[in-house]
Length: 253
Image 1 (spheres, one colour):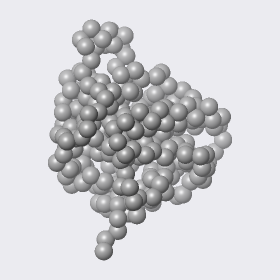
Image 2: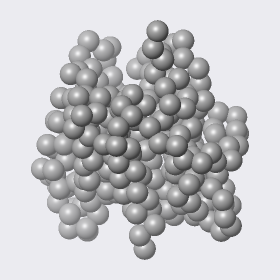
Image 3: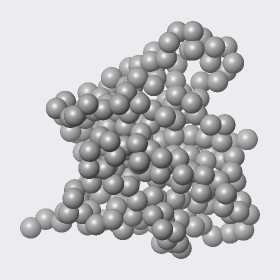
């Protein structure tokens, strides 16, 4: 019998970081003094009902350690989605986690990023429509970017592609002010699930048409969940590239 996904090891082996559990939020804390940039790691939702707390999966503990290794304080909130209505609660928790980080004296409150995985990609819309000034970069790894066929009705708020396709008057104003929003680091798996791949392709087309800052990291031979399932140099390089690109966005003056 094979290993279930949530027990699969992370493709990289960063040194473990100190982890602080504050209720429903884990902080992966880098070494060193001073204020650090920070990232909210938004794990995939909905998770299998029988799976343990995603904060304890090797995959997300690995991402926390990988960010801390590079001097970034990572926060991973516990998120539970059983129906589309739960997306409102989850979105609020992600926003609250960002504020928790900004209030932490170890964090530079003006240098935050968000990193979404899998089904959590539906939460991107809020941050694309009205990004706060402290949001320096956003990453999305094999994200779901539109509700899947057959789902119950989902609030348009949770359709990130709609957040990109702004009315022309708003788009012109943003371009005139040079305010295109934070760069999105999008990691695409070449062997993506057939129900997810079209949402990523459609989103990418709209983003490029609208001039949204986009940095694409392709994993041609990777599957959905490649960072736990495909232990290849291609996978390892893609994870490092996504992390390093996001950190550059956080640390550039």
